[in-house]
Length: 172
Image 1 (cartoon, rainbow, N blue to C red):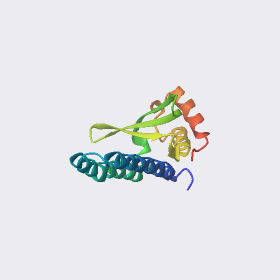
Image 2: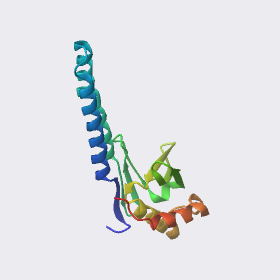
Image 3: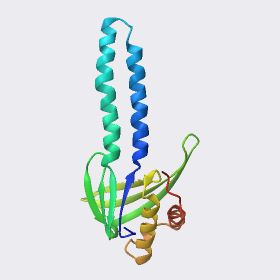
Image 4: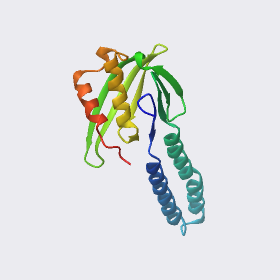
């Protein structure tokens, strides 16, 4: 696909791990609910068979729905809530780069593209835990060097971070 056509998505393997974890929690709650009083057992069953699957469905669907698709200068986004919008790379007003040092999950990197749409500022985030993160960093740098993205949209520090991000190894 190259830099003119690619998609940034969540890794499917992480979705499987999340769903298995939630199923284990549901199994534990089912076991914890049995053997108690009949009224409490009924409440546990209702909770186990409605609430927990609802949470599982929400987490899985929101990860499957979300993507960022790049086709030339056009960037199309579908949020995890299903909202769709698209913008040209020329419309990007600001690109911010963040690094989070979390002792539990390690280092994570984020890119935030800020765009004015219909009088409101829309922030589009790309996380290092997504497939295609380094490709998006390379794309943003290339578009900035070509003059497609405004010169003032990327600070010198952010440009250094994008260069670092484009060389990151993709996590699987």
